[in-house]
Length: 279
Image (cartoon, rainbow, N blue to C red):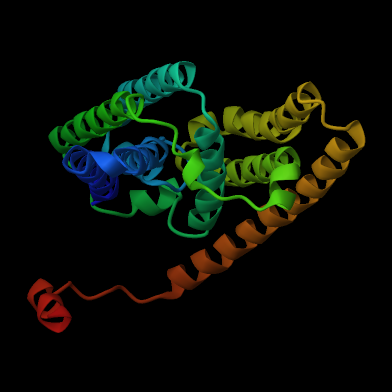
């Protein structure tokens, strides 16, 4: 089911590409829309956060024996980094920055939902054969979409940005990146519940993310000749917002877990009744 969203985006991209062949007069716009949907697949399949790629990854990890986890994890992460790295080197365009921001926002919203490994451990496990099939489909969809993406034009002209936002875009980018790093760090603090063996390593990574990685946007903005005062004001505000987001998410998850633990066991699902009611 998690593969259906990215697959749908890929099919929509193919639809716009076919339309560009049928109607050459508007072909450039159709190809931009096709590129947009391929970018959607590209970022939605990253094996991080609350997006489909991350949830597929967690589902597979919860279904595998411990000795097999490292092979699947290495394969998915290696291919993700290789394909994305190739796409970025070949075509680092403004649209990727826009979509990175959207990914941060969507990831923040989805973090409030069901995105912890412990949630997936409570679900029925898939067989190893099923996990391998899903991994193959994941890697195929990710790779095909990435290479197709490079053949379509930059779709950023389709995006209209307010002049005030455009003039302060570097600071806005930095703010969202720093807040996103705090949200990702919040997610990682929950990973140690499912991977107690790596608890110390995960805690170390959380500290590195918050202290070290969050300073990288500030360094980048210095290279873009943004005033130092604007950079530090943005960093302080973003750090406060990120810290409040972290506390809010953890408090919300604790309340949610308490409510779930008090719920009675659900009765068996009557599929035919659900289909009848839906109809």
